Each structure stands twice: as C-alpha cells, then as structure tokens.
Image (cartoon, rainbow, N blue to C red; front, side, top):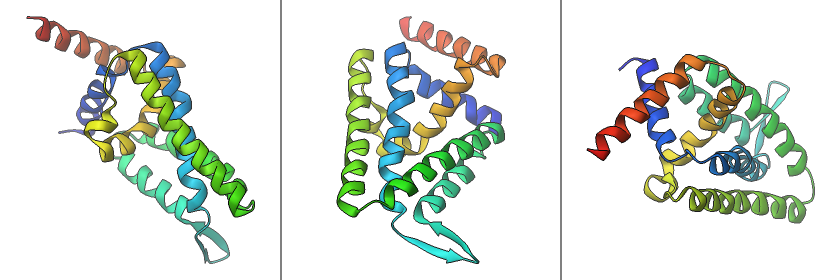
Length: 175
C-alpha cells in the first residue's frame, strides 16, 4: 500500500470516531497536554552528545517522526516542529524541583486523558485507547497535526477524499 493510501486509511479510521466538534476540540488541547505530561519526566534523563544535551524526550520525538514520515512528510515535519516546542517547554518544567515538575507532569498527563474520555462521552463513541492503547498513543499526536491542517484549510483535497470515504462507509453500514 502506498504511503498516501496508508495515510487515507489511517485518517478514515480515526475520523469515524472523531466527528463531533467538541470532541475534536478537546483532542486538540488534550493530546498536546498528555504529550507535555509524558515528556517532562523524560527530560530528567539525558546524555551529552557532542556538546548537545539529548534527552529521552528528544529520542521519543525522533521515533515518532520516523514513524509519521512513513505516512506523510509534510505532516511529519509539522509534528516535529510542534513536538520540539512541547519538548522545549517540558525541558524547562523538568528543570524545576522534582516535586513541582512531577506534580505538573502527573496533572497534565492524567488530566489530558480525562479530557479525552469526556470528549468521547460527548461524541458517544469509545476512545480508541480502550481498544488499541498502543495504536491510540502513536496515532493521536499525528491526528492533532492533521486536524490543525484541516482547520487552516490546508490540503483540502485529502480531507474531501476522507469525507467521501466516511460517507460511503456509513452508507454501506446503513444498508
């Protein structure tokens, strides 16, 4: 399957349970919040790589980028930019005393997940997290990037194809 076909299938599956604007809006805030909460403790572990400090947070972002680039280079680069910004913020919070930075990490991580469940309650759909936790955590940051592109009116043809595919699938389910 081509990377464009893989991306479309990925998006159609995601979009099927993320139709309600409130749920989408909550995800736009909740997923980066979860990322911040996860990255803060990862900034506590780092090595000096030729004068540059490389933390586990940086390595995780690099891994996500490598995965996302198999779907779409533009979306992957946008993720890398946004992820680097979140990692930068996480690094500064991670420099605070452990009780403070740990409390912020826990609050943002678990608060972000709680928000996701609220969004899916509004949507009246089960979060992908409950069925496929690894897939959900790998996919969510990319979907946030994609939703921002959609909100900005970028890559309209792709989103029109996704909309048509969703309509076709729901028409098949109704029969």
